[in-house]
Image (cartoon, rainbow, N blue to C red; front, side, top):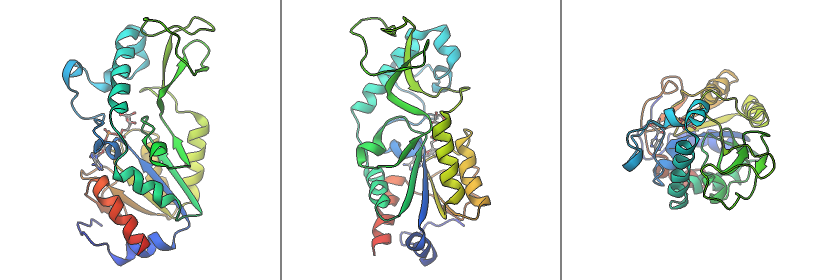
Length: 249
Ligand code: APR
């Protein structure tokens, strides 16, 4: 069922107020209003000629590690110059209403934590962390060097951002936590995600199969839209603060 309403159907409010176990799934759309381009948006400036999906792969890093590192440096700077928006803050506030609340994100920008969310499952890693391609260990402080990418101070392997690239497996502990939370949730909000990149794309359908109410918040249609319990075609930064206000009412 699609809802365009500014006010909320009372059934949604009832569900939001009576649920105990809530899962949120976010994608690039929630950070779009902060100014972080989504993966499917055209890039700007020097990077306009590249598709993100061609840079965020192990093959791209193998072919040209300097280029991929430079692209991530650019993305890091872009994210550092932006900030969480009212959508992120509304979700952080929502967490305090529910005894069992899990926020699963495909984003690597760390904005949910910055906005105050506590229980965040990062499915695709975090762009501000680095790991060694040789040993897989996390490297807290980057070595002082002009090399791009720098080499691991322990084993000499190349360093890379600790994000999940296309074709790579997701961190198994994050994936386990996500599926466990979804298995028992009563309410699932899918926010700002195209619902096409697996395995995250399966989560709302898993929730539906388990009897949860699934609400999608996305201005564009996705494969979830026709099946969601409610589909809200509005920007997350507009809608989520109103939703929190309505839950409080
Ligand atoms: N509010 C809500 N949704 C929005 C907004 C907004 N203001 N702006 C855009 N969207 C929606 C778009 O309509 C689109 O469906 O956000 C979605 C963004 O889609 P993608 O860029 O494909 O991002 P996402 O679904 O998070 O991608 C999943 O795939 O590209 C990889 O690893 C990358 O984590 C990413 C994953």
